[in-house]
Length: 279
Length: 323
Image 1 (cartoon, rainbow over the protein chains, first blue to last red):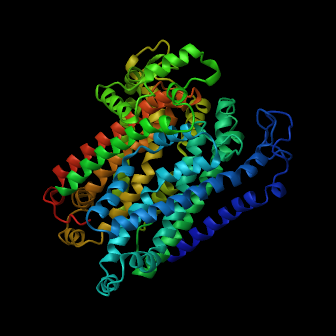
Image 2 (image 1 turned 180 degrees about the horizontal axis):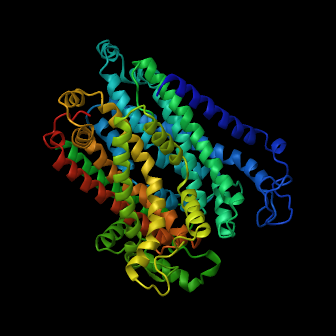
Image 3 (image 1 turned 180 degrees about the vertical axis):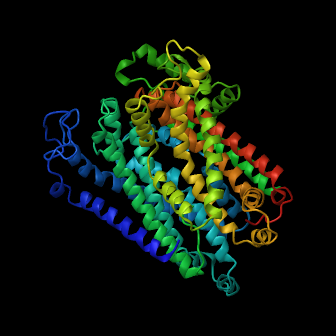
């Protein structure tokens, strides 16, 4: 990816994210109606109701604005937890030798094989609905890609002279890992963290779509679920199911675009070569 | 070889993890394990029934005895009993598995083949307009949730244009059973493939784009070998291991997608059974579906590992084992 297109993707991603951040920070200033304010049902989009109303008469645009915070918070929480787990296990798997390293690597390989959505459905339905629990389930099943990237990078760093010298100086492993390797992993951790926000949001939306979302805090995925269940989809009410779906898409895209820039910058700093865009 | 043994081991451990999750979740969660295992509501169960279930499930035995019984039942192919449908979970899944496979297998094959072809094309023309369009498109589609792809495809091709049927797997009175079945399969397979393609495309495209700087490609060009031959004979061979591994891992992703697609397209498959059992709080059925999904992913993984050993001497002879 070249410099200009990298900057362009950063600008586009930031702009999209800014809109959604405004939605989630100041929903009452942006949304024209209150979430539970009832108008006539099934109104078509108009100047008053930008995206029309749903079967209960709620204004869809307002609901969309209010759902932004729930969606983003769930995505960010899940991504933060999975970043923590992924970095820790990835570092151990990449650095440690012998049985401990094998076990850490084995955990990654095992979790890689678990089918994501079915497993999330089973665990989430036992734990019960609740935004925090959903985020936890997503994080516990979604840290694998981060751990793999961190593992590869740690294994590379381990071969570098500066780490070899630390070993010769008999610096304890704990210090090498936390004080010397972790800062060097920050660029890859940042990129993976941003990317996993979008992945977590997608998983959350799929869980909400099959009806496992938190009913008290509606997300975009939950809105699509309501539209699907309550006839919005069968009636072809694009304003109802497409709008939240597009929001998920744009938000996920925004994080991916920003991640593209972060990856470009770190690879340019590292070697000046053109590195992968997204893996 | 060590790598292959390791892979086999992790497949077995993965199965064990799934079995343990299935076993321990209902028993160690706060709440009555009898209600958790049967999915029955507290106030709908009479005292006598409750005692009968408690006896039958053996939840008063020590955990290790229960676990032994659970595993030995699984080994005999007994996936549990659904108190909601009043049927064996294994029978229900067996009935529906063919429907699920008839959309997932073609989707895996189609999305992999297309992703590979497009990736070889775009990657070897790195930086061209075609590459930008394909890669940009893939990044955008990659951000669209699977259910939205399915809903848009149904809205466009079934509702608006009316070209193809929007649900089920057969019409009431088909003229020709085969073409009828095929016409019902087109949309769900398209939706699933479209969801599964971008991820694979992006990885393969990057590998191809990196490969064109390799010396073997430059040398092949210098020998005057045609671009197409370089693409399909030289680069393809070198990315084929990633490709095959990816197909294996993709099975889990497509099964997840199929869970949603089966609902949208009203296909009576395993995914639909699973989502229907969420609303009914039918835990045994859900767990059975998870177990079968995991089994499918793991067998796909083992097959792809064997294929990798067969096609790639680096894997077979154990060179470059250190990642």
